[in-house]
Length: 411
Picture 1 (cartoon, one colour):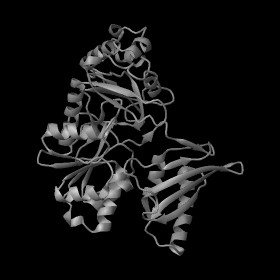
Picture 2 (cartoon, rainbow, N blue to C red; picture 1 turned 120 degrees about the horizontal axis):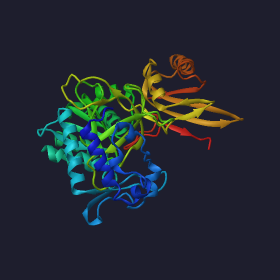
Picture 3 (spheres, rainbow, N blue to C red; picture 1 turned 90 degrees about the vertical axis):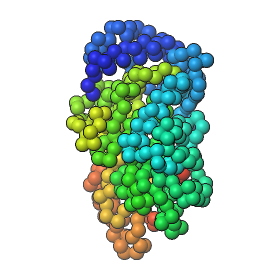
Picture 4 (cartoon, rainbow, N blue to C red; picture 1 turned 90 degrees about the horizontal axis):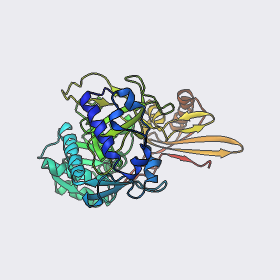
């Protein structure tokens, strides 16, 4: 991504500020911000990774006096020491401004009623959706996750027009609305979906069953939270807020920036963050920059939808598999629905991959034929042999948060 002189100046200022933190005083001990005169100089700076942030626990990232910190957010910590991100009042305001911009980009106005189902607490999701809604002037309905009976009652009684959710919970709600036959009592017109990658087949299913336009919202706890980018009505990539962040796309293996338009890992440098500025932070999210101007008229550049993470791939029988490849395969498999699970086992000295996927095809000869087609198609599309097991719609578990799709039982 191009870096203007103004942006380079902002990068230098951000590095200078970041070195007020204990972490960056060590991490960038030999780096002087004024020595960064070109984009090439910037690209020689060391990356920051999540393990670095875990090592800074609890407040090693803090770049201001602690009496200026008004809020703490954190990653889940389910895979190790949690990452603690401190926010100043300005950080909270900037996040709200970006989130309001997301809503406006999606065509959401102060006349809307926004039902917020992502979680609250240390996680950044729910409160970010609420901040943006309140700054926009819309009615926020801060439900949080779960309690589907109450979700649907509030959705109908308050005539919510916008649903904010993970794709997994949006699908669960869509199925419940269909099962209960209350679609005519629902006033939703838009869905803002974030927190997990989702395939095109799942997108179409949610949009059709809810009768809404869907928008991908992007973000991560380490960089404010959700709200740093969203797609517009043109549905051709997510606009990203480059007045607050500088984005790079790198080859996850070499660390070098990829040619324009090629897929790679998103790396983010914050330009205005006070509490915990981050320089060249490796998100591990995979995307690509979209060239040219968007027909919507926005000057903000675009990234393609997130296709996966550089650290969520699995190697089976010597073949690297990303969940996005399975999404693509199922999208082209007639009779297959969007929901699936993959079980990977090591049996009798060999890896074995089993793909469970939902289908509306009834049990019997037609389902048996679908299973054969799935196994042949999987081999052709992904290059390895798999067992496939079609199951009925609703047989696989649903989640009120994120859905785990790949279970690697070999370790």
